[in-house]
Amino acid sequence: MKHATPRRPGWLNLLGVVAVSALAIGAYLGLVASPADVNQGELIRVMYAHVSVAWVSFLAVGVAAFAGIAYLWRGAPRFDVISVAASEAALLYGTLTILGGMTYSKPTLNTFWTWDAKLTLTALMVALLAGVFIVRGLIDEPQRRGRVSAVILIVVLASLPLNYLAAEWFRTLHPAKSIDLTGGGVTMDAVMLRVLLFNVVAAALVFLWLLLQRVRIGMREAELDDRSAARGRSEAIHV
Amino acid sequence: MFDAWGPWAWVAAAWLELVLAYGGYLVYLRARAARLEREAERQPEADQPEPEEAER
Amino acid sequence: MTTGRRATAGPLSDLRAVLAIAGKDLRSEARSRAATVATVFFSSVTLVVLAFALGRDSDLMTRAAPGVLWVALAFSGVISAAQAYQSDLADGAFEQLLTLPLPRAALFLGKLLANWFTMTVLGAVLLPVASVLFDAPIAGGVPQLLATVTLGTLGFAIVATFYAALTANLVARESLLPVLMFPVVVPVLLASVRATEAIVSGADPALAGDWIELLAGFDLVYLVVTSAIFHIVVEE
Image (cartoon, rainbow over the protein chains, first blue to last red):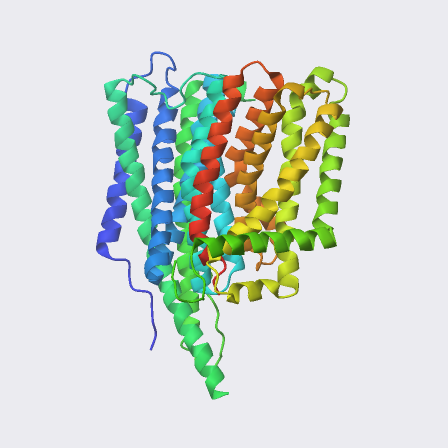
């Protein structure tokens, strides 16, 4: 009997449509409908792209870590699948954040890197996530693999506030650049804030869409993994 | 080289990064799903004891 | 902690176990000297090479001294942490340790203690050496510097001991350990360097105190987190 992968469910496709539409609307709002900034001019439009993915990258790490904890607690394979999927997304969004940060700081501050606390934190987070994937690649046994990566994700989660504190202190005790790279700072124009929040939601919807697709694939892979392992074992008995 | 870029060039770059990244990940998902299909089709051939592990 | 598994349960025997494990590690290291030779050599080379590299600009050298010190300590720390498990794994001693009715955290803390001790001793030795090589006088702030070294190496040792156990069974562990460790240990190194700088420059004593407090906070958080999840890392 052929076990074909079931067709992608309607609701997932709908989510995709909604997410991409939100992204398009957010882009329109950010690029056309919103005003230029008093200080940064049109460059503020970079901020909408950059900050929205930044927020979602941390959301993704949170999902990955808590899914990992759930896996440690319950042992259900789906939690490990969710954890990996969210880790991939976190890596994607985190890398985007760093790229976007560089795209933002070069024209505004004339340098690609300023050791801004949030960006430094993101860079460290991306390095940590890369470590998770390296370790996963080295462990064959699925349960051990899931448990070890969950453990690393717990350390990653703990490191986030600490790395942020260190980066923030490093900067303020030797104040180098003082322009707030989120473009917000103390007062952000109400319109801009709304546009930013819309883009955050759009990015989050895209994240959800990508995550669910990846989870579906991962669940199916785990299923196949299981079945072939079982077959392997029964072969051994026969021999 | 980057000195020649006006603000809209940077804005375009930033949003293009988004599009390329999302698009790239979707391509990766398609590729992974395709590999999964191939694995699934090979499995029912029960005579070959090949425990191919779908990684991660 | 579960009880009833052994005749004497409770925190005191756990503490004895921790000290016993630390003592075993330190004694075996004293006998084999493998890690000691490597770390002393490595840190000396680091100090000397960087002294040469920066030597033309004496002001730069003095200002770079704290950073150089901690670079040497960090690299050496990674080497000795990896060593801590190698000798155990080689003769199967690690598996034997795991069969003992000890809480896993005790095993972790014992190894941590040994690593921390060796790193602190190394730091205490490197301090005057770096001070001389880089023309960075330390006379005034020795107690604070020792506190910084102790807390900084503790933070480093916590992360190193934890990840060394995690990578011990993996292939390519030597290259993997620093890759996994450094993003986590960055705040510890940062705070240690900043504190050392503040003490050596003597300009702002309160600043040094702030960084040392931050170090203590880091150490506490990482200690609690790693101790709690260590048992998963070494489970079979």
